[in-house]
Image (spheres, rainbow, N blue to C red):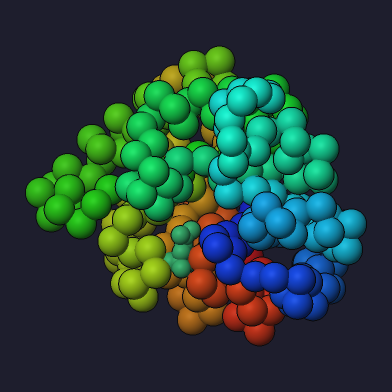
Length: 245
Ligand code: PGA
């Protein structure tokens, strides 16, 4: 089954209103590539303006809270994101798992909140360098999938992103064979757990994706797109990645 490719950008804590000019350029490129879904996840502060300014891009968030509303100072709910014009959210990014101590169970609850709000949930998994060196990458990813992806997940709203922690922002990537092996394992997990419908869940690769390596990574089996950090900030870097899909 060939799935529609999804190229997603994660701006992390970068970008003010001046960055909207980059989004306009990215939107024009996305319109030239109608076979690709293009998603940009700017900081919360830009979501509503971006959703209005570039309607042909999918605008998403980088996290959400488990609850719809309440006394949670500083947090944003999935329903609020939806109301602001977001159509997706990244969940369980390794920077949240590490710096904010987010565990699989919390990521799972956040995914439920995203599904209820009608958002696409991009659940991130990936091993540390020590785990890869110890030959423990696949068991680690399998455990993250088991506990971060809800048992009754809304599969049409689910995307998995494989992001080896040691490849994020480092310029290093696994070999093509290593990426293919992990994507095959994630695909097999989804099919074993959800049946044939699991085969329709897109699996993105993330970690130092750039114009020079995007095409070969995106050509691998079960690589249905990319989650791009640094190279999604500037249109001149991100557009060639869209075009490589
Ligand atoms: P990078 O980040 O592309 O800068 O490595 C990827 C990510 O953190 O999603």
